[in-house]
Image (cartoon, rainbow, N blue to C red; front, side, top):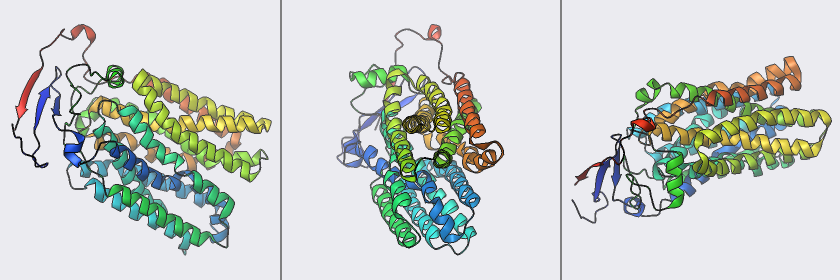
Length: 461
């Protein structure tokens, strides 16, 4: 076994569990990248905050963009829909390029920063709405997709033993990072200053994404923390409980193998439903609040509460899923998201502001919590090595769910807000029912597990 101090050739060994899964142990996080792995939570969190306003604060700029550029409101809703389409579409190909080494994490983040800047520049100076579709919806959407896929999967690789809480925390940045911009676009930006506001925001957020991404580094394939034995229950009670409730995948599934299990299809469907409901709520909560007669500042506050709870809820549900299991928490989240749509409609019909704020917050929690659940569940079921590609397949559900904004405007036009919110709530509840059928692939039944199996191990120089 090598004992060199050179970090490019570190001492490690590989051990194999009863299922044939290999773990690479012996190297610490500091050995690999010169710093604690907590930085691979903090930096991805910063990167996620840098792309959040494009989705969660965009609706707050609708009135100003509509008047300044003379764009139809329908165009603006569809602009968001197309943004979501490209954000989701890039996830799988970016994941494949990341895992083959053709797209290093640092370079993916730089591309994301560039797309973020181009998006805001196009909103400020687009001479025609088509230019805004290209600059904001396509380039900004693709950039955000690269950042999202890189940040979320980075965390799972560095925390394979308790990924739920960490993934949820990082994922939360994608929501509450937009809070100051909701107020900025709603209460400050107007026809006299919208261009410099948008350009300044674009420069600031691009710098945030690029700076965070500059320090990204992936661990080696099959890496496992040096202080945790993957073949025996860890001494850390948090890690022990997380591994008991969410056991590691039986092997490292390739995308083709993961697809063949049938679980990807079911996860894709559930995410498409719940994510569509989330995007619909983001796009139309302002409208239903204004229709109820609530003041614009109050509606902006409701949206901010939704974004804050959306983000913090991701971290909370991730932590809870480590304690009680990913699938259980996912089902609860689907139910909460569905019932909250009924609550928003009910409180708006009653013109009851406190209830409107409460149900808006609950909706934000449910809409945000679904994403870390699926991100962590994908790694739990299929392993970490190909998680960027595997989660890219699941996350591509947003290609369809992005229609929650565009198609939502069609449904609202036909059925009004009442019909649209009732439909949204029912869709989320149905997704919760379908999640009951999710099971980890390849996991042997308890009666088939050999008691006290002797692990196979081998050392690698």
